Image (cartoon, rainbow, N blue to C red):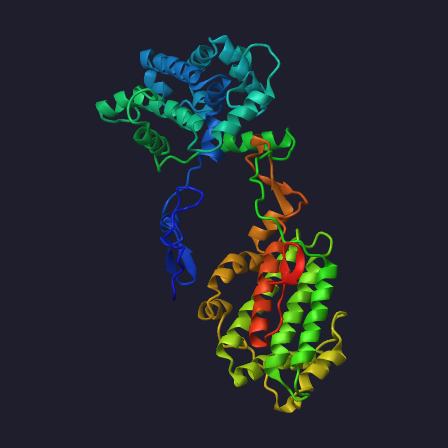
Length: 490
């Protein structure tokens, strides 16, 4: 299989992820390195499971800057290290704190709340009915009005598991286990971690901290009661709202073309058909070249309807134009009289198949004109001599045709995503019918929202121009193209 020239190029986005070239092809799947072992590991999610348990630390992390949070975290770690029963404080998650003996639980929560600034911010925890050890927290928290924005900031900044804020909270959780004696590391490593984030190479230390924090005893079953309750209460008690994200401006301008321009173009193609038409006998080549061209121009005309180019149907139209472009280019490259006839006979065979189906098995749907498809099935050849091809007309799939005709770039650019729109797969369904919720307390979930999609007319016009190029090469003398100012000479 010919390899794309772009496979080894560096990521334009700069994202650190497995390149397309480095995915391994297994059957009809492209597998990434981590996916290969996905069924052999147990996943533990920071955002879904462990962040709710450390939400008290996440709140402290966003009260002020990093220095304030680290100072508070070190104060808490000192309490653990100097306590006579420090081994009891190995798990400082909310669930872990709730399991402490009542006296120790009160001591630890009371110590956290000694700083008035921290205590005021943590009042928001009282909003949760299912907060572990809620009675102790409510008893010791100041009697103030909770600030929901603090909670939203805490979740928003800590939701990405590799963010600086999340890494700081994960460091606190890890160091509590180290200082309590439940997590053993070499002395040098412990000292390096204790100096975080001011000492050592953070490019090495941060990933090490995150990897160590998520290491859990596989024999201990995780208790997800509080994480599930946290997200459930957050969802039920706060609204969805739009995610305000900065979107890059669209640089490329769509070619200006109106439906009147397209009508004019269709008239000129019909005139060129008349000028190049030489016989009333069947001319499979001439009919195919002009027929495909007229067909895609009509598709483009319909795509120019109000809202079509920025909607779902516009994507279906683009896919249709792409397939027509690839098929026509293949036919012209081969330019075999028998192949032209085969392409035509395939269409007639499909008409015969449907004519028989609606004659014998079922009533035709409203959009089917049965007399028309009966006529198409038998207008070139008596249908009793016409076979019905159940595979593709060329014997090849569209990708292979695009490779053989030098238009693989167009196939790669347009086919896969628009096919998803044709089949109604999740990706296009997600893009066209859902929006990302801007409420961090909803975990960036998706909610239904009608919205316009990027305009597809510019891409469609480029493909149509390629088809017009093929028309001109096959039957010279047609110079009209779609330009930025409408329809004009190329």
